[in-house]
Length: 396
Length: 123
Image (cartoon, rainbow over all chains, first blue to last red; front, top):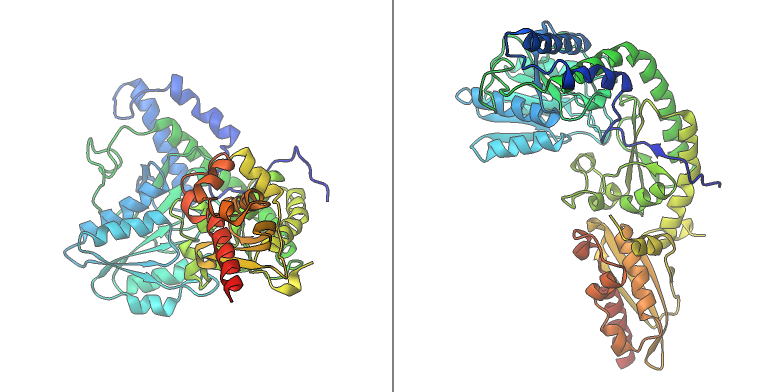
């Protein structure tokens, strides 16, 4: 094997993406030239307001929202998830104090629900199967009259499994609850239609579409009312006060437009690389498995696991060969807990520890995937040779 | 995040493997937590003549195992008992704070192996 010391392959796109250079160019005038406050009535203010409106329209178009006013800008997906869950739960407190979510949510959903539980709300975490798909029958069973909010991730970025949102939406509405969808990892990768799928609230992230970090949005159906988290001058339908982050919002809006235009061909390209890489990792290596669903899967997501070894060791070894990825191992987490999403799919702790998450992006090529396929078997073999858990038959 | 020395021991771990006819064997940790290590020692005239390890764990777990074997090799059993988690971490140029407890078990595995040897000798 030839290790190319100069090669740098970044495959941790679900954690962070580069900003599209066309997007940066479009943002720049809003730092030095059109720096007015969108609430001001003069020309400087109106220029900024026009820019916000344009961004709102671009994002509305990406998700087929009924009106651009349904888009509320926030500081990112974490804030959007907090706003949707707390805002809706508190608004409807008198009608019911139960929240239903899934066992494979992002921590911003999990911890928003836990925060509400300390205030007297109840939360049920509905289970998923071994491929990460929500158990629909269980979900329906878990929604009772007190349940006013259901929050489900469109696809968990660690596992990649895409949930049947349309079906979920029908059940939730039949039961008289509102549906929030965390579409952070999904928007820009596959077509999303909030009207067709009757989504009440949806979280959207800018950086996941190659826009700047620190900005995101919540889609809130025009007819719905929720409580704000941040009070002040009443910007963003009164739901997110504070002077708007105009330059970042401009970046977000243009990123959404570029993503919409390129989505079909880019997703097709990524799926091809993804499936080639998954096969190239799990077929030749014994005790290597795919995490999540093989088909109902995000185009950029390669989540695999290798038994008998630990993920941080895999990441360190990969980084030394110029490949930068991620793991669900406890040893890579601030909390020292393995990924709850992997555990929810029935993996044992030691199996979750051996997971490797590769998320592809616009810069990823088939040649990058070939390089990863070439270096991984030796890395796995070296670590297994050192591990006391490795069965005898795998040893040299 | 890791010192150069930790990365060196992770990359080129010293004394990996098993000793089939070991005089003492010590295992600590739990795969559920993400770290499990076994130390094998061969003792001659009260000295650690040979030592090997097997580790399942993160970079810090592998590096501390390797460093511990390096520190222990050739030492008397009494001297080896004085090797601590702290002295292993220090010899590696320090460890990240979160790793000091969970992954720094190698000294414990060494002590367990020495105790195992002493128990066997009594019989």
